Length: 120
Image (cartoon, helix red, strand yellow):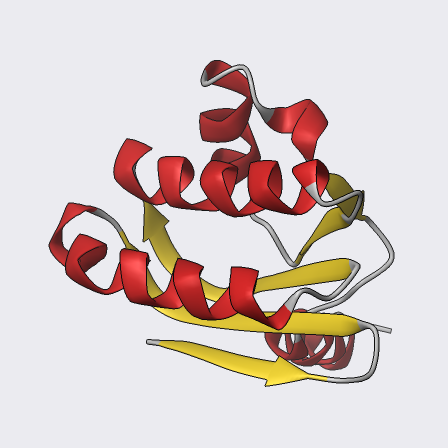
């Protein structure tokens, strides 16, 4: 599932589930909608991504490339190291800014649970 939200200067894509070959039919429509919004900043929230293959990577790369061509920037938020690895192998990691400060909702819960279960 991919949801699109906008503000005055930003388009945010929130992706949940798999970003792969099985989902490719929706990619052209979403790309057209995002490009049509013409915002300077594209934020791709990947906190809910469970798997990404090269098809999903190609989709993200096409979005980042379109944003770059308009003079904009693309930020990846909540990307898993394996997803970053796929983009790096594709030679496209430099198209993205990585939001290393963002913490996905589950990350905070896990840390609190681990802290609570650790012996004092």
